[in-house]
Image 1 (spheres, rainbow, N blue to C red):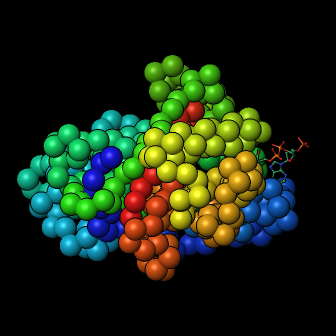
Image 2 (spheres, rainbow, N blue to C red):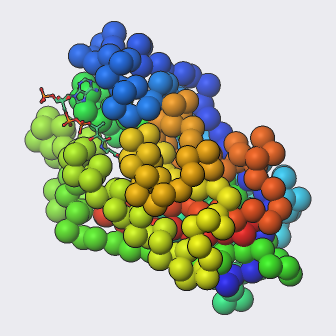
Length: 327
Ligand SMILES: CC(C)(COP(=O)(O)OP(=O)(O)OC[C@H]1O[C@@H](n2cnc3c(N)ncnc32)[C@H](O)[C@@H]1OP(=O)(O)O)[C@@H](O)C(=O)NCCC(=O)NCCS
């Protein structure tokens, strides 16, 4: 067990709302198609001139404030994202700069597809347990609106922008991470990717012309893998926690598709009323999806002391995992 407490949560959603009906003005799609296949009704979009780090800093400041944690006392900053401010050095230095951390605590980015927040929780928790940090700030930031082809109806309708953050501190009671299961299946790395811009296919005039810098997805393949991956990780993490599924008060699944969530819940035999869902309003916000969901539930008073939560996600890589947390 890793004794820690989520002392603060925060989220930032951009103001601009893009409804399914707005998309159907420029794309061959419809509210009915998107809603029935995905559960998405609308999503938020970050203004093109605003860097995604702005959202991460805003969410982080809220989490730190709620935790009563002075940024100058922060021991560790972990940023999970798929939209680096710059390819090198990523996003974490931009978040650290925005928060103002003159004592220079360590920061780094985690890239584990949409599972980045769950992986980040495990890594931050393990570093705290090892004594490398007494507290940590974990931020999930996503603005995939920058990386989707707005002419490709198969991908652009699915994603939304946003950020979420948690401030973690040591706990001296029985709160903390009870069980973790993390996995990766490299045979699935082709399901979700941006082919160009890395070293295998460097950016060139041709790659831009061929739209190789946009997100490519094999939707059906992702769908089929996602359910079994989250099921496996959740069963394993629950077993490692020494609890049963019936002990879990709230399941917080990555919000990629309502049908994926419902299929997972059915396979697990988990009560639907204890599953948190906000995909209808925010769509798939990738690494930011779980911390946004968490912050909404905490601030609405749904999650209370002693509750057991299961955070489960899958994403590009294919990386997947579950963290079981006692609140
Ligand atoms: C994307 C997803 C909703 C597509 O649903 P699907 O039932 O698998 O649909 P398909 O991709 O097989 O496409 C079926 C048809 O709908 C069409 N279609 C795809 N997107 C559409 C849209 N937005 N509007 C209208 N039609 C659309 C396709 O072109 C295809 O038409 P065709 O048969 O004439 O070629 C679904 O596969 C999914 O959610 N996958 C998981 C995606 C995901 O979670 N990604 C993020 C991972 S973190």
